[in-house]
Image (cartoon, rainbow over all chains, first blue to last red; front, side, top):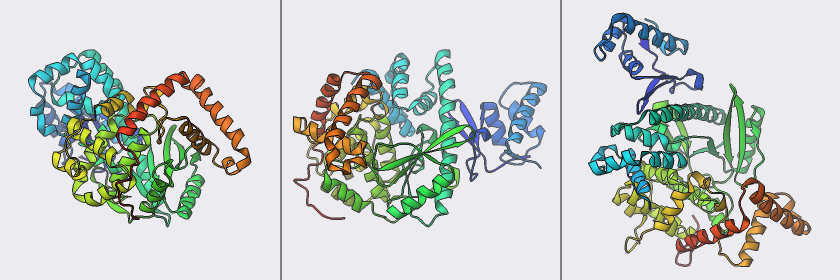
Length: 89
Length: 413
């Protein structure tokens, strides 16, 4: 899976947003407010990524077990899927 | 200026120039921690909270749980609002691009590229200029047919149109002129000539893949000054417009014809105003000296404009912080000028009825009653307090030699 290039990551202080800014039209409900973990995952998704690669991206920054990390990853991917922010493989 | 005001300006300078971190030494950073509540209050007043917050994070200033909670409540909402307005801007540009008209985007997205981050600039509405009267009518008719609803306006330069979608209300200001008519007829005529269909410039906001038409950069720079002037002549304006001016000049200096701009300013009697604004931006917001010098070529020595800066700091955004700031008359404070201003306000309020000469006495009375009523019930201030503030701001206006064209050669553009 890979990030949809219509969406870009915006960062201000400790706040991160994934915004479909390149779309011709978009609305507030297509924007995600995320955190540092989400930002790391989004950066990794700029190229084709497997779940394992996403797990490695998180665990290279945080000392976190597989189960917790995968739970976070799935929740985040679910959010992205709902707004069309990731392209399936 | 109070210490927190000076420090706030230093932080705004840093937000515009993050590579100049050395300008905020250790002592200043300690002061930031001590004066944080005051700094947050000033940023909130002037609608610059995101710029402040991002600067604090970049400087790694420790934030208390209360501070973090405050920013968590405010910053995401501001950012969402900005992204949403960007989406609305795209929609408006697509709608108007389908018509055979020439239009220009004012402020908004034209400034976003100038900012270090688009989130720094609160973006509450979309302003579009359509100067050709028939094209303006066409644009208005088309927008109304798409469900835009006009609001009643008391100004003669734009129409406010509301659009409701997804339980949100968006505001579009459709301008027929850049600013409202001023008391000076020559000034109005010159502006009409300058802004009679200049060739639009296509600019791109790359982050959003958005290409849009805007005024040529010299005319756009003039517009930003006129916008500041318009607000200065009503209730005032805050740091945000100085921030706009600094960011825009730095970003677009190579596209602005400063000799031409200076000529226009001289003819319009705005050289003093521009000098003051530009020097404040140089002194407090880090506008590079060489750019400031392009706009202030005839200043013999550095003046200080402390009184103007005090006025700007106390105004908040567009003078909203103080209801007693509502009146500045352009021609002085004697009784005849108050009557002249009454007449001008009457014409603004009754844009059709004032054309009937016989109605003037009744319309003057109605305007005066509205003024007193609004002061008492809406603004909740004494008229005497308002007039006292007016006189203070009048002195400030005189010190800027506004509309003083005695030294200028008059030329048509």
